[in-house]
Length: 491
Image 1 (cartoon, rainbow, N blue to C red):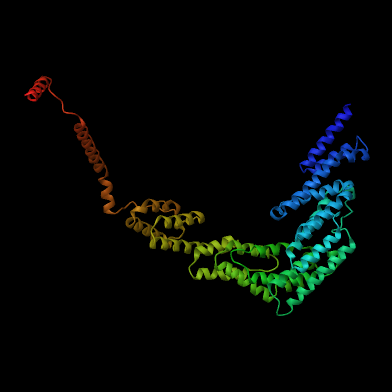
Image 2: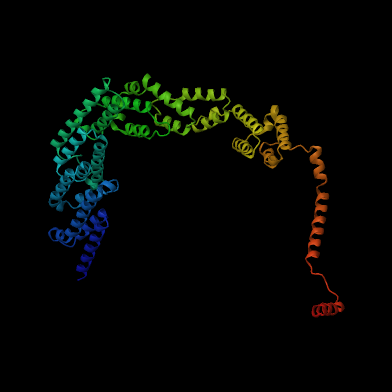
């Protein structure tokens, strides 16, 4: 009886995990259940939970695809197929019907993702989906289907026992369908590259050719349909078009391209085996010109963070150091010293932030303070001097000038005198004890003024208190007055 209780507990726990979508954990419990009963007896006991979860997935995916396709958990379908293959010969019919139903409604992406998540979905449907996307030139969804195919393959690889890691899963699982899909994509790639060789070339053909080349080299490399050199050549054309039409406020597409391109094994292989040829593609004069213009525009608009990111993305491929130095020199020449320091900091050109540059920036800030003596200007000086530890004593040629400037500003702008006084310790300056006669006399009479102000306030207070009191009456006269009033009233 104890064994029966343990078995029932395991089955109940297994089914609960399945319902919650914790399929990997449920599969571990399945192994424990197999230690109690035979496989033939176990499968019927687990069938309902597996079937319910499978139907739940199909229902949610079909019903919510248009609104929630980004969060539909295709991993559940892949996990069920991997850990419970015994049931999927039966489920294959449902998968095919679901895919065909959504295709009839014009939703080819659903069918493609379904095929990419389960090898039990008819591979001919996958071929039809690829063909449709190629005809529509919908290369973004085509790429998404292949990304899902690779995710499925990697997921299954991660679930394999350690002793069978030498085995691998094919991407599509049907060699003939794989060959046919590869031919379709290669034909589309050839058409797009022909456009690049004519006046019809430009951004769209370059983008399309690059996306198709990426699929052929990243996901269908075993077919050997294009060379690594072809990928890099196509990528260079697309990169140049991206840089030419880049939006200064949003370079995400450019950075996304660089990330994928650099991580493509074909790119790494070609750069390693043919470094000179790789450099001739990515560092050609026309590419350098377009990128140089882009970088200058970024620097000109003070988008130093974007400039730094672009520089880091192309590290080891293209150097922007000459452009950086030219722009810094231009900023200094035009007295934009603060911006020059900011640029040098953001781009990690620390050697460019010299004492001379900091001194010129400080002088410029002091000039701006003199022209616009407000608290905000004082705060800018204070922030800069604190950050860069400006010690005026180390610059004797300007010490007296700075002190005189501060004193003059204090006299002319008493409303910011306190803020200005905060600069003295920051600049390592001592305030002169000699003060103007007006200020000295004011300080001399401060105690006297305070004393008389206090006397005056007390006097006013006493008058108010006296006035608020009601007039006092003499007891003896009160009665007579009352009688007189009463008598006159009766008369």
